[in-house]
Image (cartoon, rainbow, N blue to C red; front, side, top):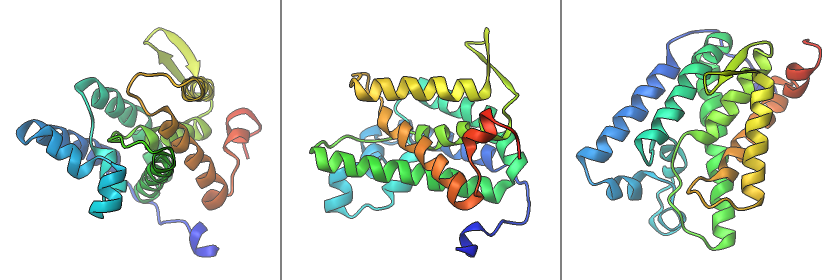
Length: 211
């Protein structure tokens, strides 16, 4: 288990900004080429994975977005929370955290879709971003986020509020084209990452004594 917990040597290389650029370039590609073709190739779709063997979709779905507002809010969150988190834990650790939590969120969502017999095109970085927000709140518990630019919320409170909203929407089946369960799976992946790799309790870090 030591290799799982072995830390990287600290480096900082603007990985969050590079991820933002990749997301924007893929979004531009959707307008240059046929949008449905991009979805079919890169968004996570159960039938494409099972019968088309497109296993790369577990990674690429995180870089495809459905609308300008979709990518705008996701990239804003990645910039606000991801850059600060990357500076704190280092670029290599940040990229590993981002990719593992995003892949996990997509993989569990895929299993749910297969078991339920649904066949959506899952896309967006939100699963990984929920994990990023969790880590940001754990490492910066005293920072404040201005919700809607007006209401100040401590980062841990923001994370709990957003997670509660996603849980409520997932349980009661909000029909809004958003995969709320994927967001929750991203959050869960972040929690597991904290316990398994970092051997830390993110909730104690957010609401208890720092250690």
